[in-house]
Amino acid sequence: MQLGLGAAAAYGLTSMPMAPARVGAQETGAADVTGPFDWKRHDGATIRALVNTHPYTEALKGELTKFTELTGITVQYDEFPESNYFEKLTVDLQSGQPSYDVFMLGAYFVWQYGPPGYLEDFLPWIENESATNPDYDWEDIYPNLRSSDQWSLEAGDPLGTGGQYALPWGFETNTVMYNTEIFDALGVQPAETFDELVELARTIKEEAPGAGFPDT
Image (cartoon, rainbow, N blue to C red):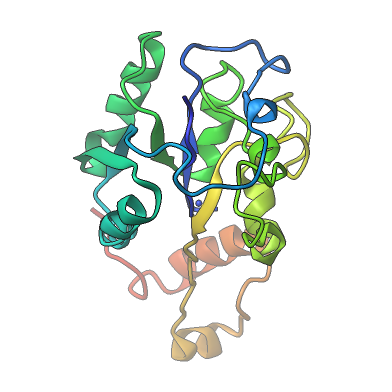
């Protein structure tokens, strides 16, 4: 039994097939779920989750009691710090006998774990109103978050095509801040592209070496 633990582009929750599947040939079993949607369909079941230590995880753990009350499903989880989380996950997946039904990952790990067949496509489940609460508004999630975990599993194909290999849960942004006095003195402007950022960093290092972090 595969159960998606709902609610990643930075982080996501995804489920794994019980054994590696050939790319493009994965059978999810979603079509076998028929009839009215029932929160208690799997009452009494237990699913195992692997999570890393993160504020998102704390939020998730705070909702597990409600999830069990609603569904009758018990969630057991193992938690590891990010420093060795993905090592633990990779070893478990490569064993051929995975210990977990659902786990956290960053969107970029779809590229690593998707092609070997370690991830299950959620779209058949999301689109089946017998398996997913009809009130669940998949389109309400930002398109770029959905597409960050969606891929055909074929090298060179863009994101946003193919299966949905994780459920978007949260995202993080990186911010570049700058010292206006240094920029004014050098007569430079904030970068708008990565190429400009690299060139700007080179200029500041050469012309204002004391403005950044000291060399170590």
